[in-house]
Length: 65
Image (cartoon, rainbow, N blue to C red):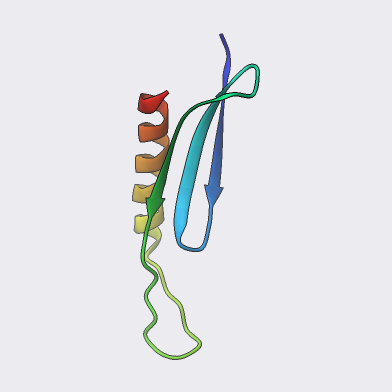
């Protein structure tokens, strides 16, 4: 059986989901994170945090499928 992995990189979370060949979800995971707001009108986020959240979301979605 073949599977598809979908990933959504959003403002406050990375979501990953695994779907079978019929389009049915077989596993998913959402990894939330906090943005840094050092001052009004500024938003920051460390790039390495995105990488960690991506790895966690994808690996957990695959394991749960």
